[in-house]
Length: 228
Image 1: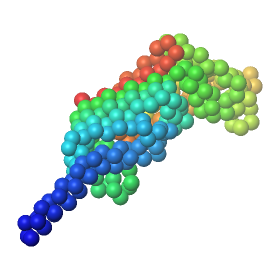
Image 2 (image 1 turned 180 degrees about the horizontal axis):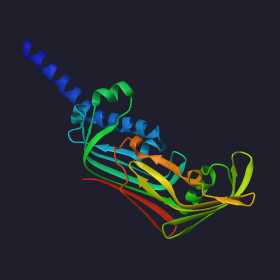
Image 3 (image 1 turned 90 degrees about the vertical axis):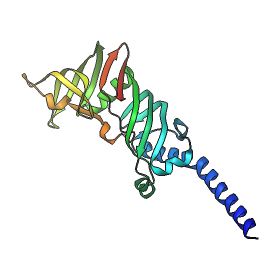
């Protein structure tokens, strides 16, 4: 009888472990999706998690994490395509349980690539430059040129001529003006703060990777980040 009880207990434990082995990756996947969904428009099927054995995830380790998708919105900026792959991922399982989301604390290696079209950059700049009206946006190499009307001080409509580029300042993707001329009532003055824009702070990016290079080629801006 005692031997039979041990056999039954062993079967139950084995079933529980098998269930955890299969279920842990799904729970981690849902947790990463929840963390990403707080910062961008992304679908559950855009996130995948693999780990072997799956039960190892309960210790705070994941073999591989991938998040990729098309037409993803990050903050106020639409991204045509994003692909992020991480390997040897570490996270805090206790925090994940209490916060109902999974935030990566470190990874052995990984890569982030995101592509934003010039049309989406134009749309972003037209609504992000404070007080802008009838703003035209053109690109030449990595330079961006904006011309149009800007309402200054909430009272005066001024002609604005702005040149600049997109770049990183620490963890922040920025639009950085190199030349700004604002003309109103027969006078001209420089208004760099009118056009300096914080696009997105990757310090908030749940996968813990920050772009380290930005290139503007043809009709798209490419962000690239790497963990190694």
